[in-house]
Length: 270
Image (cartoon, rainbow, N blue to C red; front, side, top):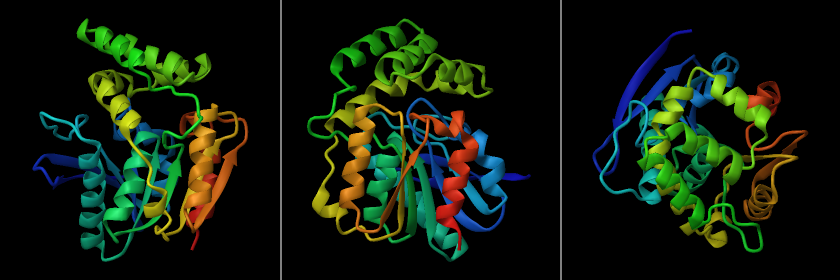
């Protein structure tokens, strides 16, 4: 399995790194908070056997650049720019697979460009009315203190345990993975992404016009906030399939990669 590292330019002039693996129809993968393109390692081999998989480092991590200021809207534009570059290169529409914060970026990018032809989104943390709020400012304050003190690993563990409510077994799997050092390196982006998520507002009228085929995945055992955001997508997107992953929470990509792969391939089958 060979890989190529591509570079494209964002709308504000930073360099975005995209690793290409495999051959076939193009699939762009967008990771969530606390990770890099390496977060897709559990599923890369299986997916790249069917597709040309494009793994992007979002801004502020990995081989991508960053800017002095941060805006979630710039990240929407980053995903759109990546999809357009890949579509121009391949001559076809691009499927985007995205997890968590990256899934919000992918959904919004699909409203910006016709280059995105299909979506697979897994638990975007869309704020919904009445759902328990996990992204409160006290978490940002605590994370900022840990990061300022140089305890990036402690910040990640606090985020996983306290903000996400992730089971200890899943945390242990993450800390044992080869990309753990890369995850700790991007911990300083946590506060800005938590605040961006808090401020984000999902416009149902705009998304009711998004007619591309979309697979929405949610862990059957995920906290209520993810169930609520998934239900919002299910009743808003006019051309969606919603799948509940039995026994899973926010990280089935790690905990049950075969299940994630099976549902993804089923949806993307010709």
